[in-house]
Length: 243
Image (cartoon, rainbow, N blue to C red; front, top):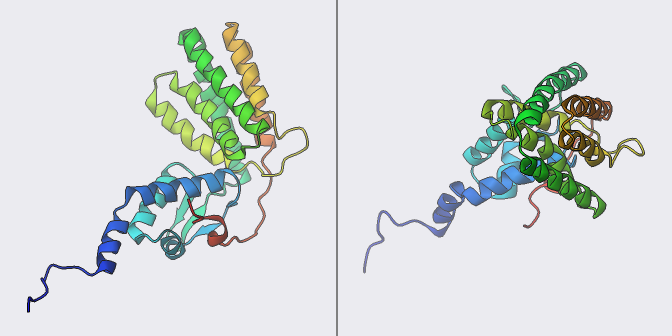
């Protein structure tokens, strides 16, 4: 009788090896958490327990840690020593500072873009704003939120300064997640209208007016930030749904 090979693996071991190194699982985990944060289904200070995430996604702890580290780099998650990972919850003082910095950066962005961007590049931004508006009107909230944040990054990308874009990405992500899910009546849908006024000024060659519209837009965004509640959410009720 042939003896089992010493290198043979059980089906369970083979499955474990595959799941531990699956890029698809890693990307789905990242996208699920990112979307849940941006859609406010996981509010600030929600704990992202590694063990629970491993169970939900049937993956290894190092995969979960890699995703949490990526989210932390983007400003979406705070990693606290000996406590774990939590959905970022900037203080009101930090929110104020972040919006002040955004104003400085995006003022400079508009100055450079207004002087150097082509008509075609500006037209590409207008298409994004139209998609943002359509997503809202058709009830596609996840896409609307992503496009609303992406508009600012797309504008910054026209400067050709990768470091500036990376800096702004963290600020945009961290401030967007602090905007309350339920906003004051009449404020919920105006992001694309505000973006539209910025583009209209750029198209007319009026950089100063575009900067004024952006400052007004960011002021309204800051005003939409509301104190977060202390509810605790079950990760299983939000993440890990069949794809």
